[in-house]
Length: 286
Image (cartoon, rainbow, N blue to C red):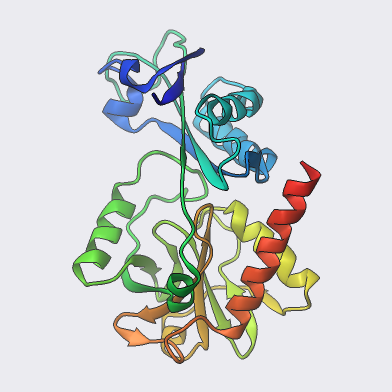
């Protein structure tokens, strides 16, 4: 039996019910977070909650994100995932239940809070080394991509366009810039330097992105935070994505063209090793 958290209670998932007038359902009026746990230990849960706190403030949803720390740990433990090598918590907060109008409810309503947990598996070494494929698609997202909202229709359509083109992932392109993946942050290796889009309202401030920047600098790997031009997609030596469950995942085919020898490159491999060492360090620190 899967246990979830809903509005103050831990209940069987089969019993979880949300009103059809919830603004998350009618207006995508909400935010979410996905946090990874390694052997039951959360990976930078504090950073996830800080990002959540910023999104709630921008959306003006009145709830303290700090209470989600215990909720996240509880749904892992209550589902027996505290001894599983890799698991995650999905957390979603909406403005709450109110008659459908575009303006905020005139009378205060209680936010809807939902959390669930599940296990996930890393790619095998062979799958990881072979990398994934990606296709470029137009970036039609709204102007505050830095807020992790549940309004993901442009991402869904972008990923489906990539799948229709025979690729695994989508790279969002706007004004001649390969901004980020539809599900993950996107990186290139250009002349031995790791390049990723700077933090602006055009990208999500990925938690894994931040950790990879830290470990790159710790290991003397040169980094530039700058836009990746579309033209560089045909000249860069390596590409990879980063994300909560992607970790550091090589991208070895872009728009049907093999990148390098079609396998994970040396810089991507080095960053992956450094990232996994950070995971082990955080686990040990608990």
